[in-house]
Length: 487
Image (cartoon, rainbow, N blue to C red):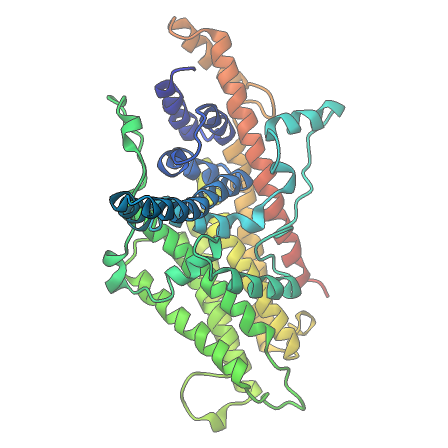
């Protein structure tokens, strides 16, 4: 379509049909740029996450961050020129616009959270050019394209203890810049449920572009929902960063005695505990679906296990603080975490309707849970409770049970994704059931048969792109968790 209203309507339709790439292509044809990024990107950003196009979401969100960073610098320069020319009202107007509309932008806040969430799932080959054209080029030799993907290949946490520690330090430094994605950690540092209603945010989204909708209105997140989702992402990455930094400075025990705490370990444990309490308070008044909440609680419990192992239980008689008591407490926490993950399996049944939800859960909950599990595994190994001691050490055995339960959850998700992708007779084909649908649609005389076939082809291709950008990460994490079962 050439009409902008038809293009926006098409984006909504293809989004409902889980054809994220086709929706993205139409969005790009709109030519959205400059300040329109802040006002119109809401049309496609949620669709990219639901469709597993994480790299495309990162590219768009990064463009929004760059827009706000450059605007901040330009406003300073132009306001200075206005003052020099005696145009005081213009200088005030620009400063007010920057302070009240741009700096607290809702899309800026959302982009920070999306970049942090999707960073480990970035695929380098998707950063340049058209991903569909590149895919077709790879398939010219026959067979299906296989992307070389690795969790956290360039950015984000990946479950590797050494890499994560280095990246956590860098994220903590980058968080000082307001227009850097990690600065969302500071946005939630002092937040509480009582102050959530007072959170300052400017909703610059232009909803008038949807004014053509009459019979059907596409739903978009409210300002409040967008704030809560973004702050939840900030809370999670605050926990991840602190947990990794705490585990990095943990001191291994000697001669079976509890290691002496240093000022640094005490400070970092206190920071993690404080962040954990804030996160729990924040979520008490927030609506979350079942699987989202239990996976969030699972992540929080792994953070508690890290604190218990390194610093011991909070309060109580320190004379009873031994390695055995810490191991027992950690094993109890992890057993409870295993039950939570098991309950997530029953909530996330294998049905086609869960595919888009899995694409959302992967960056929001699955990757953080995997990273925390690997962080705990590295900490346990340092304390002498490695994977090979799962039959002799309670903590090691409990962690192995958790890892294998989590592995089963990933297998369930891979099963659900295979059904979510199915659309007719398989890859690049239209099934027998759809042939009758095509004939019926063409028989109405509204749309030609060739047009219906082209639309179906776009949907099938888009869903296959989702497969290639989601399944490899799930499979990689599942393979890594298999090591907890090896002799």
